[in-house]
Length: 311
Image 1: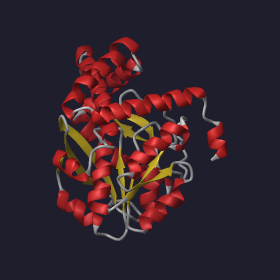
Image 2 (image 1 turned 135 degrees about the vertical axis):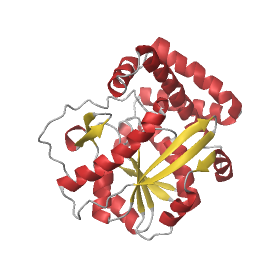
Image 3 (image 1 turned 90 degrees about the vertical axis):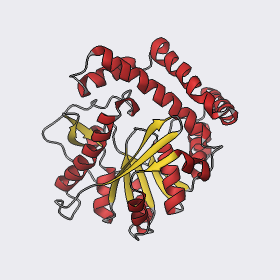
Image 4 (image 1 turned 135 degrees about the horizontal axis):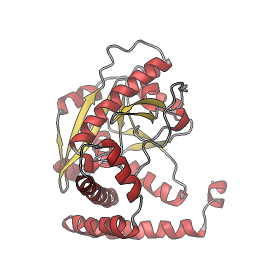
């Protein structure tokens, strides 16, 4: 703890109090005001600050070469609005309860979710920076599993990091940081819990290259390794925004009938490719709800790529 405190700078404290001020303000704002606030914030970030605007438009040109520049810019503007509203909704989670979330959410296949929750092996839920994953994991953990765990990166600002952890823990979620997460993740699955992680960002040299929007893309292997090591089911879960404060959760088991047993590079690649293909289908339907600001194709494709058993 002492070493963590030594890493906290004056800027970190300013950022934290800014975060807390926004959180408290959002918590007491009427919900109907949040879309208007998100519209103002997104316009500021997209048109004036231009945060990662160039990266966003370049990614969209790779993913949708058939669309015009005007169409791609429209998607980009809607994307910035979506994520501004997503941040506000995450802050609002501190004031919502399970009953309120249930009023907001439709389930495409609730009975199938219940079946998975009743199994003893646990379940690996892979998703991406798409839709509203925060609302999805909160309601799934509390409603069906009575708790679960999330694998996440530790933020540089430890004060903000701790506050986001507290928000997620309110929904019965244990937090597992990505470094050394394999052992803890396997333990959660062995106890029959839900284990969620986002698997769509650039995986660097530790990732495996699989197709994503027609381009070989370095992709994290965590979900595939956890599934293969634990033999727990692997599901792609997405939560799509269908209106203001209305979402639909889709639960897509990954078809692994052709995968052989064992944590081999071939199996890791096959599993990762299968779940990435499912995620791509949803992103194509709702492109404005995907995090195009991230440099998804940062790592160049190499024909000879070794995959390590790391989460």
